[in-house]
Each structure stands twice: as C-alpha cells, then as structure tokens.
Image (spheres, rainbow over the protein chains, first blue to last red):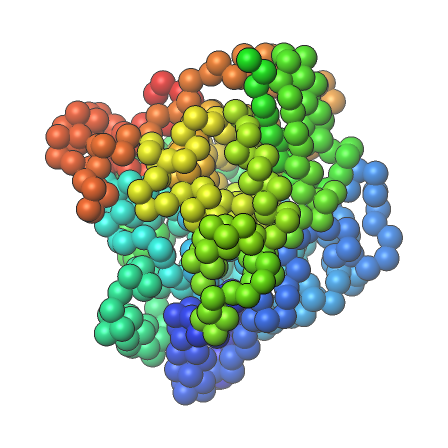
Length: 269
Length: 269
C-alpha cells in the first residue's frame, strides 16, 4: 500500500543544504510511490509561540492560563486553531515523519520547537496512559535529519561539545519516543558549510542511498514501558537485571553505567 | 558594588507558579541591592523565529540566507533589529541571568529558544576563538530555573524520562557554557501542579532561601578549554589521565565512563 510521508522542514533559504536534503527526500520517496507532504515552516510563517490564540473561542481559565490543559480541552471540542489542526491531520495520516533542519544551539530552531510545542498537544499526541512504547504514534516512524555547525569529533564522548548521543536524548526520547514514535537513526550532515562542494555532494548521495530503504529500517532501542514500575516509572529490579550489563540500556536511562555507545545514533545497539 | 540581574521570563500567565518564582527572584535580589531587569517574553510578544527581518537594511545574500553569518555582519554594523539589540544590551550589563520557564518537551519553550537563537548571535555572544571557558560571557553567571510536569523519580538514571543531567547537558553546556557563562546549579521545581498548596509554598520558600546567597554560589564544573586539543577539540591524553577516574569528567564528555552523578545539577561534583 502507498505510504504517506510528512516532511517538517525548517530552513529560511531555498538555496541551503537543508533545502537540498529535503528535496532529495521528496524526490526519492515519491519515486518509491510514497505520497509526500511538506510543512515548510518559514515559508508559511508558522507561529512558534504557544499562546491563548491557539484556541478558538473562550479559554477556560484566562487568569491562570495553562497551555497543556487548555489545548487538551480545545482539542476535545475541535477548537484548536486552523494551523495546528492542519498539522495534526498531516501527522495523523503519516507513516513516516522526517524533520529536516539545521541544528541551532544543540537542538531544533525555535520555529520547529514551536511546531513540537503547539502540534503535539495533550490528548492528541499523548496522555498519562499513552506514552513511550504505549504511545499514540507507535505505528509511525520519525527521523531527525539535520546539519551541524561543528565537526563530528567535537560531538564525541571525548569532545568539547559532548557525546551527540547525549545531545539527542531529550529530542529523540523526550519528544519523539514520548509520543510513541519509532525513532529511526538520525541523519546527521556534519558541518556541510565547512565541506568542499564534492564533500557536500557525497553527503547528499549517501542520504539518497539511505532514503531508498528508509521505510524498512529498524528503529532505535528504548526500554519498553513494561520494564518500568507503573507508579514511579523507574526500571523494575527484574528489568535492571535483564537490561543492565556492561552498559546501561540507553543514553538517558543509563543506571549509572557507561552509556551504550551510539544508542541514539544506531539501531540494534 | 551593585550587581545587575537580568531575568528572562517565559510564562503566559501572571497567576502561574513560574510567575511566583520570578517575583520571588525580583523581590529578594532587589532587597540585596541588585538592580533587576525582567524580559517578559510573552507579554512583549517576543519574536521567536530567526528570519531576515532581524536585520535592518539589506542582507548580504538573500538567495542563500545564512542566519549566523548575516546576523554577524549586521551586528558588526549595528543593523540588528531593535528588540535583539535591547536584549543584547541587558545581557551585556548583567552579572547574573536567570531564565525562568516551564519545561516544555524536555527543554525551553519555543519563545525562549527564540531568545537564544536571536540574541546570542555570532560575534556578540561567541566566536570560533571565544567559546566555552574562553567565552565572551565568562564573567557572567547564568541559571536555569524551571518547573517540570513529571516527578523527580522519572528523571533519574533509572527513570523512564532519563537522567535530568543528560537532559540539561545541551542547554547548560551547549548554550550557556558555550558562550562562556558560569552555569549555576539549576533551580528545579518538580511537578508543582501535582503538589499541594503547602508543597508549592515550601518550594518557593526554598527558592527564597537560595536566592539570598545566589550571587556567591560556585558554578558547575566543565573541563576548561586548555584540556582540549585546539584542532580536534577532543580531550588531550594528559587531560584524560587527569580528569577520568571512576567517572567521566562531565555528563557530555564522559569518555565512555559512567556519568559523574549530578554533574549538571550540583557544583563541586
């Protein structure tokens, strides 16, 4: 069956490397008979800031406005703003979501953070019961594809920026996996602005190759929900015994052991 | 001498716990003869998105717009937008900066990410030569003060959200320390919305007490720049020998060892 892909794209310039990476994804995935939608956040001037204007009509408590609770109510009643509703529709239909962006300050640019803050609302994207491996989007794959300003060596476990696996944990576990997404290994374009034109072409060629089999890739490992106590959300003793050997199970839930190398970068580690 | 404090505050509602924490900081620090400025991001509708409109006049290359390079040029020539210039003035004058926010999706809300993206421009906040312990703001202290939605147990090294030290690394090392700031231990208000009124009062009372001595606190530890090779920005062998014992030196630059417990949460570990 035809697969649906959503690309959430956050770069200001059509001449950028990020634009080229996005175009490559559109072209290859269409050639594989996927239907592809692109949310071009800068071009559409996507609103980044979470405010009461995201709700049509009255808010419940304007004196003590709480974004999560107010958007939950609005979502229940079909009163979220049109731009949020449209992104939620695209996300709900997608089999795969690719986030294409330049890394700004060790995470996503504000406009893309605004997409996470505003689109992944309580009720729609998660509830207290439906999180992580029980999450709402557990049938959907998601992938961060991004450029860095720094070289790869700076992002190693001995590098001054620190291990990229640590930097990716809050994004990949805390946002994507939290909502249930199967997180595919990130596509990292290391410092394309410092590369030669041939170097940049080689990076795009490797991405083109990867895109051919992307939909069949295995996701990264996260300890499943049933490994955790349902009150404290800490690993159960029997899970610790099973999962903790030389390394902790993941970069975040490391149990005081060395981090499993490349846990946030490669499947099957 | 009178100390100057900047509070960058990001909550929509004057009735929130975040607002109360901000007010406590204003009151206590003023009572200690500090001059305090507050940047209230939602109230001033702070622009979150990094665009060409942040530059007054012509951009150098509109076909291939690169935010860091364009804002560097604009900063050199005094052509950054008025809102950015005003925040840069406040930051430059400050001895201490407090960021007060509710954690959204394991990091700052988009409006505060936009403050980082737009205010901490190349040239003004960092250069290739002036980063980390050689950073431009090395005489300034900075502190993240935030509320969480989850309980503390969920953010432990055995918890499902993962170790809070991992979550804080990209923010504290990657943004604050990158610009040279001396990073004070974060002030974390664990799940105030799930607490009783007495519990919330106790949290605010503890913050009040801490604020009394805040300006004299020692910062968190980061391996200084001279521990790293100046080409690869990896730890020099002699630094590895000195810094790596039972644990790695920091949560990010862990050298394949267990993370030093609470490295991003407490000074002197």
